[in-house]
Amino acid sequence: MGPRRKAGPFPWEEEAGPVKSLFGKLADGTKVHRWSLENGGTRLKVLNWGGVVQGLEIPDRHGHYTNVALGFDNIDDYVAKTPYFGALIGRYGNRIAKGQFTLDGKSYQLSVNDGVNSLHGGKQGFDKHIWDVEPFAKGSDVGLVLHYTSIDGEMGYPGTLKAKVTYTLTRHGDWIIDYEATTDKATVVNLTSHVYWNLAGEGSGTVEDHELTIAAGRYTPTDTGLIPTGELAKVSGTPFDFRKTKTIGRDIRDGHVQQVQAKGYDHNWVLDKGITSKPEHVATLREPRSGRTLKIATDQPGLQFYSGNFLDGTLTGTGGRTYRQGDALCLETQHFPDAPNHPNFPSTVLRPGQTYRTRTVHTFGA
Ligand code: BGC
Image (cartoon, rainbow, N blue to C red):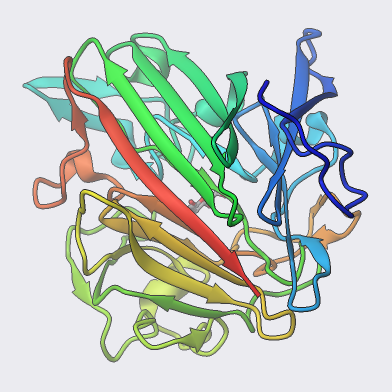
């Protein structure tokens, strides 16, 4: 535990360093803890269950704080029915067709949990495990280091994968995610974070009026099972063109076959900048009434923009309000879905001796 300091005028926590409290218990009695931290005007609440961001509060242009991340107020809902609210996703973000791939001449069958396909790591992905969490304070940063070791063969994936994820809050209120992983056998890996954003506040209704910009001239169209066809299609002249800022709602009812199939946007954007050694700005989200903005920078080549299509009014969130279709969106930095089955997509293979390392930076404003 690093140095602690008063959080100033906020009633939210008495102290700004990461503070641990009991959130609930799993059926077998295992304690689930919640870590609360604050820095530079951003307040983060994180569970050791799935590394879940259970709350993320930022001010609007008048300094009013709101929780902009969908979630639950109890562990039972996270265990029983979460659609990955705020969770860390592994070993493989998004879908792998039929849960199958071949690597170095060997075929693997993964856990299948989305029709015939494997989604977000299979039935019990990284979002459904207890992670070891250590708080830190370094210079002007505060944060948490989360560890999870996935044993060889878990969910069908080869190799023991040691994953380390660092959540950092900077003094400017940026939220940085650093992902690291090593393996003892050749495997595939694609880690991401599954926060559902609503910059007007979770439970406040649709995000169709949020303005979005994505620096991508192409996207990966999918089949009816939301598996990429392999094509890198141009966004120009389609509803998928977010190169110039537009509201999410503007073209969402366009009738484009790709949207009808996905019930909205649920696609991987091929970021113009490609893979970079350092994070580069790729997307901006803005909510006009509050003025809140979220900017995303990443070193990854892809961004999954999912417009909350499968929220259907059956889940009640942290603030006691029901989440309906389009009440949030996800912006998941990643390699492309089903890359292990598409030689033309950037490789997701990790080999012994290599370290998987990637960073995404979230910058908030109002
Ligand atoms: C996927 C959606 C899926 C959702 C899970 C997103 O990352 O793209 O297809 O339904 O996660 O809630």
